[in-house]
Length: 100
Image (tube, one colour):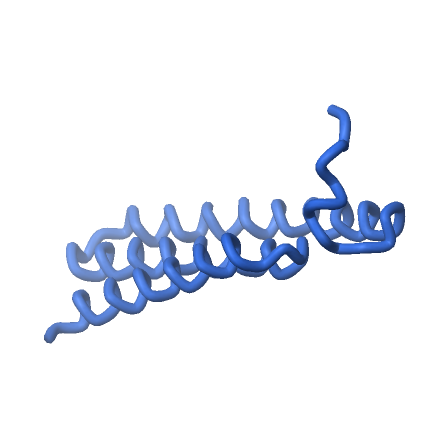
């Protein structure tokens, strides 16, 4: 088994674990962390295929995805914290009647 197939298998496992966490857990912060785990699984597969083809475009794409993910987390965490202060819970079922 070569490195690329091992890395792709690991990325599939990371994505599946994150997807399972999003589907099972109802805590907003845990769901956000599981979505980041899914994103890291996708990034790992991009890196594996970029290393396999020996191109720089995969590295640039991963860098851009990391920048966007950092901006997303910088915006999502304060929103989740504000919601938890208003509802006094992190359970996503309490946020069902939000307007917007």
